[in-house]
Each structure stands twice: as structure tokens, then as C-alpha cells.
Amino acid sequence: MKKTTIVIGTIILVVLLSVYFVSKKANNTSQDGNTLRVGYIIYPPLLEKDPVTGKFLGVSYDIVEAIAQKLDLKTDWTEEVGWGTALEGLKTNRYDILGTQMWPNAEREKVASFSIASMNSVLYGYVKKGDSRFNSNLQELNSSKYKIAYVDGELAMFIAKDDYPKAQTVSLTQLSSYSEVFLNIIQGKADISFSEPSAVEDFQKSSPNSLDRVSGEPVRTFGNSFAFNKQNGELAKKWNKAIQELIDDGKIQKILEKYGVEKYYLVK
Image (tube, rainbow, N blue to C red; front, side, top):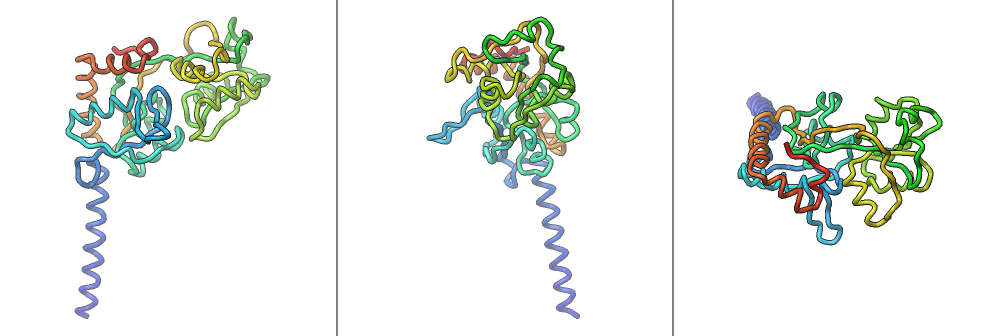
């Protein structure tokens, strides 16, 4: 009887300790409380990873590191994820923050909390060089005659579904690069996609004069925000204060200038 009591007590203790550490991990950063676990999406110029050295660079990377320094946190860039699964990783506590900024639309806000925007950007339609079919009226795209290419879970997917539901789609897996989307357009497998000018410029370094921007107003203007686990409210508050400091002291503008993309992003 005494042995049974000891065993039961041990089991209860293990369960309680497990609950405690899971709770601590969800409400702080890592178990030591001082390391920020960062999930990330490769998306130049916001985030890139050198294939030789493994080092990270990009606008989002520099902002995360600058904020972590302000908050006396170490960073651990733990896991590369896709656009469609990135927020699920936050929900299941695989990391504390998504280090690649994204647009906080209504669907995404069901799963994660978002910081204030550190900068704003725009999206345009892009087509194969010389294709002028949509210049007079982009609404013509809302037809089964046309195909829209995108990476699953990325902003172009939401634009296609919301604005052009009759169009066909060519979807790529979540860890696909945006270069693959643009290649689909060049190769005639799709007619158009929606992207930031900076991503197109990066692609055209290796494939010059391959794409044209559809004339007219941008299809979306949005803020670039960092996503958090919904239980990490305290961290999100501190993060927002740090972002505002970086905006006010001109640090974010300097980061944009460092990567030569200040004409594509507006700091308010």
C-alpha cells in the first residue's frame, strides 16, 4: 500500500511539473526565460540565409536582432517554416515569434497576435514581360480563362481568393521560393501573381527583364508585423514599445537603406 502511494505521488508530481514547464514555456520565451525562439520564412529581402555560412541577413533579421538587444534577449533562429504553417508553429509553441514579418489579416489573427507595423509596403500584379492584357482593367482577371500563381498561405493566395475567385490557381508548396512563382509566369504556366516590388527586383537580378508590373494602383497596401503566440501578450507589449523606439530614432529607416529597399517600404 505504501509503495502504491509513493508511485501515485510520483506520477502526480511528474504531471504537475510537466504542466508547470509547458505553461512557463508558453508564457515566457525559452525555459531559461532569456532566449527568444524564432521561427522564420525565407523571403528576400526580409529574410535570407547564406547557403554556405548559414548566416541570416535581411530587413526582418536586423529588426529582430535590434529589438532582442533592447530587451536583453538572446535569439535562437530555430525552424524554417512555410507561409501556411508558420502560425500553427506559434500555436503549438515550437517557437515564440515569427521572425519574418507578414500582413495581419483577419484569418491570421484568429491564430496569432501581431505587433504594430514597423513599416508599410505595397503589392502589385506581375506578368510576363510584354503582357499588357490586364493594364486597362485588372478585374478582367476574374475569369476561368486565367491562372494566378502563388505560394500556399502567402498573401497572393488571399488576394486570388478574395478578389478573383473565378480565376484558376497554380499553387506551390509552402517552402517554395517566390522565384518558382515567377518562373511559372515566365514559362506560361500561370498568367500573373501578386508581389512586393522588392521581391521582383531580387528575382530579376538573375532573370533580367523577365517580368512587367501591371499598371495602375497597388492591389494591397499593408503593414509588416511580427506574429506571436496568443499567450505571449507580455512579450508582444514589450516588442511594440521597442519597435516604436526603432521607428522614432530612425533605426528601421537605416536598416532599409542598408539593404537598398527604402523605396519599397514606408516607415510611418
